[in-house]
Image (cartoon, rainbow, N blue to C red; front, side, top):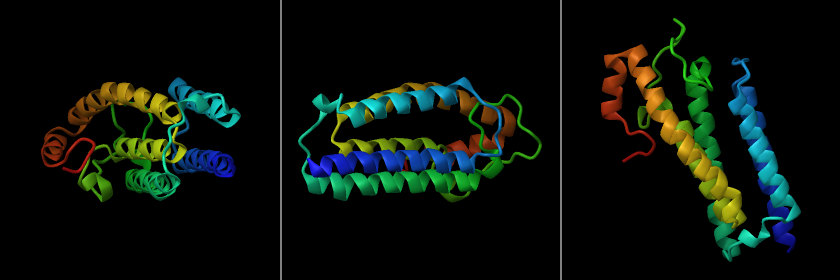
Length: 184
């Protein structure tokens, strides 16, 4: 029971830290979108149920060692990949699919983009798998995971079409030598 309470606080601290760091890294983008609000509302609702114990029915009997030695490292790896990718994107990052890129935009093919086209999305999934293992709660990680699967299955093809439209053959060639979400 003691670990469970501390684990909940650790999960909360990691998620709050992630969102604060992400907000800091993307401060150059000042336009607010409703999608951003939806993300924060979903996070707040799920975390409030989690912290109050309202979703304890979804707890799984994971061994303590698995939770700590697999769950936490997966979340840290996911956060690291996310921030590494953001660092390489710099001002090229945008929360929306843009029809027309500014002249200052360029195709990023360094860092994790050397291997996969959407490392920030991959990082989101890695964080959620780590969160699932660490929290041992299928609702806490399952609902956001399903939301991301649906969201990314719509967003990624649209985003790639716009990237091909903006960068042409350069992006088409890049697609041929990289995978979408995982290094294979």
